[in-house]
Image 1: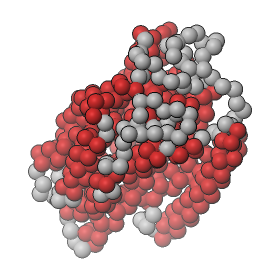
Image 2: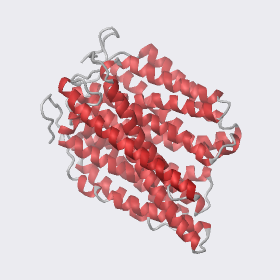
Image 3: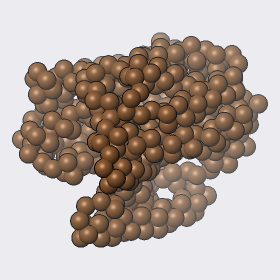
Image 4: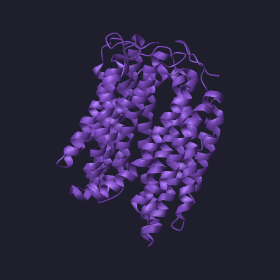
Length: 499
């Protein structure tokens, strides 16, 4: 496949070439830079929530909307990207994604208060939701099968380094310049990446003209949005006044009810539309057994990992008394280890396949989560740092083969839909894991406090309960690691194969 001008090309994948051209390499580096900016923005934002509560004079429940609105937007937009990547050119999708992200960042810098900041977060999320599936689809389109592991390793490097430096940078900015500078630092980087894309990004593949099914978009928004909103509010259930508990219960019932019904109707609608290749999200990706196994594995791992990694800073702060800045520094070695292991893992995948990586990765990930369950208020912080670093190495051994094997199991015309499915699963499973573990953590903490335990003991007990759930969730990974295979280098339009 060769690159040509924007008038004749777009984003429907063709078979990957034997080697990448200079233009294609430039595309990949631009997309990696864009992904880095998007992930850096999200990781810096997490640390800012306590400061925003004070500076904007809002409640913790209101502040939660700064993350909930972002998650909801991602959950609504990502399922649509499978269709958009087929309908519009690579260049158009990149410019749209980075323009939305840059606009949202600018709105955040200029935001006079809470309401505008929520709007800014929604606009930012719209761009981020397009960028990540675009990156994965383009990798499958332009990178030769024998080099995909190495490229996915670079993606792992980006996805690990941004969270590694994000909290530390955010802490320094919050202590010196204020929360607006979190966005102020990201904005010029985003604008440079956008300008570089406008100047140098070519188009790849070819578009196809197909009408967008409005009903599918509506069902997708209510389905995925309802589920993610319900999950994001789950931790509030069972706490507070009787009236608040009742209102929360009604909200959860409505969210999950509407989300479940809309999602079932969405699936039914896609099964009908895909007969004529007009589906918003083509579900024929699940005909590939290796893809389905990889997605299930990824779903379990995302729920366990994102839940545990969200609880860990709370455990460090509330049970061990570690400051926010020191928490970021403590987590830094693990993130750096994961990032720098990515390219090496990619080369191993290209040469040896999945099992040599997934099996030790599953053992390290599950084993360290079980070690998490031994943490208490007397645990030395250096022990936490070592265990967390080992877990991140286990995740490094898992992410690259999972991403590569899942999408590589599909025929080229389904790459964009597969990328959308994987990204959607990550959002929903991550939200589910966080909600479940926060609920368990709150219940366990309350139980200790009722018996007269100290705040530190209550926090440690809550974290123990959450970590136990994560460890139990991780057990199926030990079996799944043996089932996922490296796909054949060339997948035709028939039934996908693996070896």
